[in-house]
Image 1 (tube, one colour):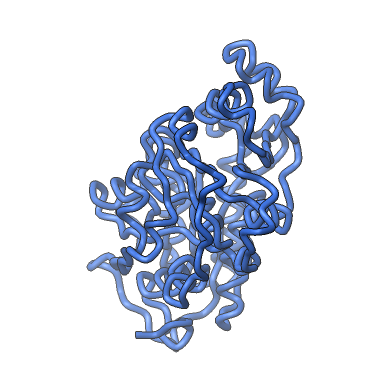
Image 2 (cartoon, rainbow, N blue to C red):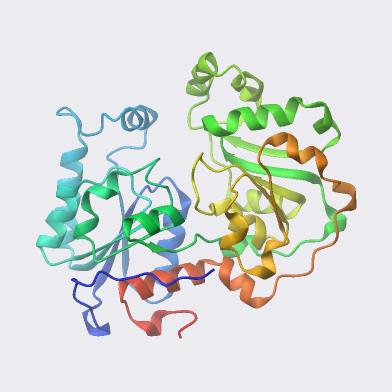
Length: 355
């Protein structure tokens, strides 16, 4: 299902001559932010990137997770104020907040008071990172990957994407793994992956696992409350995996496993990366098939619990045909930015697939 972002009716609509420069603000330690900024540049926009956080050290991440980012001693409010000053002084006309976690209403209000248009895209649901609800009314456009948030908050629904390097093509005869998985082992994933490693029925499967946690020491501390984490500890990396390695893992796996946050209805980036790589998706997201084109749905298997995988006959999986051009476009970063440009009311000539 493709939907077009909705602009806020009370905001002015810029024409091409008013475009100016675009400031992209987000968590720069996620490569998705850089990929989106790069696609805007490829369309001819002048783009500058800004990190929403004052620091990405582990101690700072712990502080934010504990909700201490805006206590009187935190440097974050000053960081946001100074960043707003730099953006205003930099001659930007539009500010794009992407996947943000710690942006404040005061920051957005300072930008809009200076005449800048501020746009938002969230790849987390409000149950996980809901601070953006404080300033929705100030935005020129707002979009989310989460269907429920879009419906309940009046935001546009824009599915996520996969980058072009995942579109490598694949050969079923060369499968190295039955199941591939790459992701941060947050609490919802620990039990599922640990069970996959220990279940009797899974011992016959070839598993390709790329497990990440920003601090192995903190992950060890997690195991005090969640003993299953100890099974994963030897496999957990404190460094994120290069996207090219992730793409190779997916292209050499019969299925890619997707475990979203509990209660999350949005299609994860892993959904798009797995499907664009030409493989099949195993997902705990019960809504996944409803929000994909009909031509892709047969590649998706939905499971309620990890033991449901035991019923799959991996040896009997059929060879998949290549994706058609429409499906590749739907899964791509090009489609994603096209939808953002539509909602942000930026020039139609910058779109990869203009209407």
